[in-house]
Image (cartoon, rainbow, N blue to C red; front, side):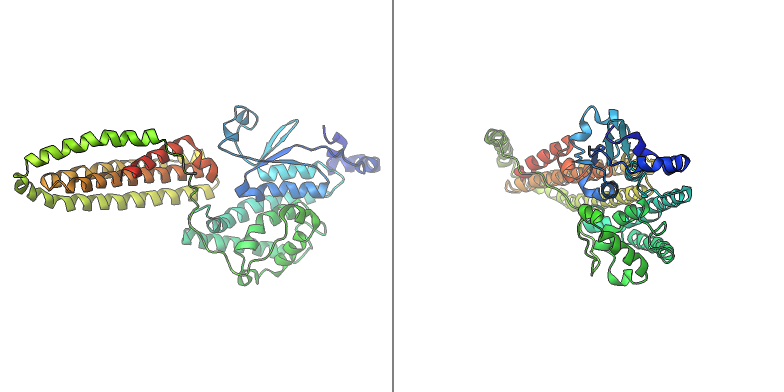
Length: 433
């Protein structure tokens, strides 16, 4: 074991041993890595909780950036980490997942430190603040911050609710810090570490001066902690924001352009030529019936109008799905549970039904200009391709939203087999326009 079992003695056992435990507690730890901490770049603050705790405890942790698209498919991943949660700490004894659980484990590895308190009451207080961080602060704060990073779509009503919840959490912290230097007393503990790491994006991005003004104790405590070398070595310098960051569009990571195969490009062209000739022949011989076909042309705008209504409905249902998924995620549900939720499944079925109708709606339009001059034929064909481009584009956006809800990042989403297949289909359709 990288750290002897003596170093894992909890405060309760130290009290039981009394003075006899003092020489053991003063033993220097072996500087071998405790394990490897796997994390996702976009939510690195979760891993920073354990990394800062390790700095205070003098513990070495190896780190590894987790790629869901590649690492998540490895055969041994779910075998050793059945929940699939990231971050997770891989040790010789097994895997620990969930950011706060990992931070707790690291803090408890050194019984001669006070990161997890010096008595039962301290431990209870620390656990209280860790639960407070997860449920009262972290969820609403990320609902507010993530749209400014392009990770979530902005919903002004939800953002306003999140801001109100964050204010309530900071008010509770302000009241506590009016009584003591740190959250659990006159010493820094895991409670301070976890809350500082969680609040960093808030202070750096959205807590502008007017928002911070009612919380002077919280601000002073945050800056004091951030100035400590143990924090600086992990999270770096933190500059308080002067103007709250605005929401930005959700980032869409386009895959690198692929080299086109000249053969593949030439084949569709060669196949298209006989078709074009076949189409032009009948039109030359049947110019006379054009007058009979003209009344049908009036039906074309109606088909276009119906298609427009369907497109609007598709967009609305798609927005409803995204909003519902964000709400469920905020309530703590994971990607699979969100996708299996009854309301989500119902909306997805409705969306697929609308898309099928939208794809079928333009089918009647090309019949209208059938007797029109030959020059009109390419326009009709182009309209059909444009509609297909739109349908495939919508499919790509919906699939990316689903994969994002499952916890995949931009690069992992773009490398996904289904996404690359649809992108290739989209590029092929665009080449025909």
